[in-house]
Image (cartoon, rainbow, N blue to C red; front, side, top):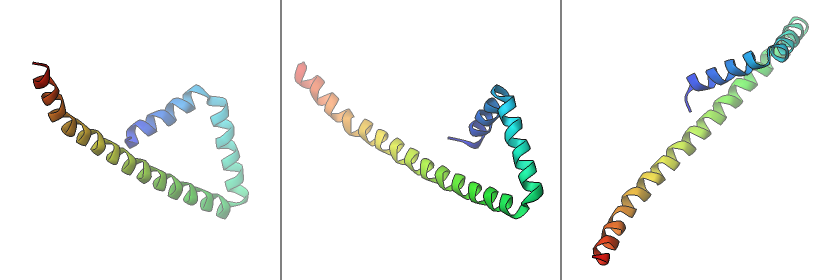
Length: 87
């Protein structure tokens, strides 16, 4: 999971649904015009939440990759022993 793929997915979403994206952008602009502090707090909270989710998913991906590698190395001797028994 890298930032480039996330940015590409966001761009694909905007290009697939231009009217919804335009409506959300317009609502954000109107809200920012009337309640700037609230919008800045929401943006900050959203960025913090996205960062936390990204870190959690990154850690989960690292551990799953490590477990797959460990199973691969642990499973290898067993396969060799099974082949030797069959011969």
